[in-house]
Structure formats: C-alpha cells, structure tokens
Length: 123
Image (cartoon, rainbow, N blue to C red):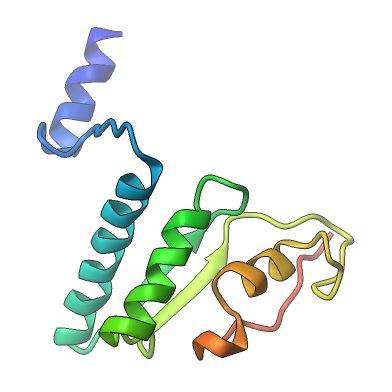
C-alpha cells in the first residue's frame, strides 16, 4: 500500500491531491473554478478542452456554478467538448431517466446557451 501512495505523490502535487470541505457549495465553487481555469487556459492557446461529465447529486453544485460563471462572468464554452462518463443502454436520450436528460436539466439547458452532442450509446 505504501508503494501506491508514493506513486500518487508523484502524480499529484502534495498540496492539491486531496481537499476536504465542510461546505458543499465551497467545494463545488472550487471544482468549477478549476474547470474554468482549464477551459480558459486551453482557449488562450487555441486548443479544445475535453471534459468528462458525471451525473448524480454530487456534481450538481459544480454544474450550477459553471452555469453561473457563464451567465455572470462570461465563461465561454466555445472550445469545450464534453462526454458523459456513462449511459444506460437501451435508454434513449429523450428518456427522463437518461444521462442526456440529466445533463440538459443541470448544465445544457437552452437558457444557458450550452449545447449537447446528439448521440447514443450502442450495445
């Protein structure tokens, strides 16, 4: 086990490997800020940011903060490609229980001017 921890120390800087928050809103704002910095960094060099998105209750605050950054501070997603980390098969993207629907409701709402790739999982 100690060998695994040594590898993690090499991969992650010691100060950023693990952060513990007592408030979920502060944690969500921190994660959204890190994502925004990645997006802006890629934009500054003309590259595309590729982000894997999770569903469920944990990332909802992050998505809410990303929407706020977009609406209030002008964070642009023009150079961003996203993909869902998973999807149920054979659920269709229009199904209320699909991850596509989840993302539309929590991040890709048309009011936010963010789009979603039209595709579906294959069996």
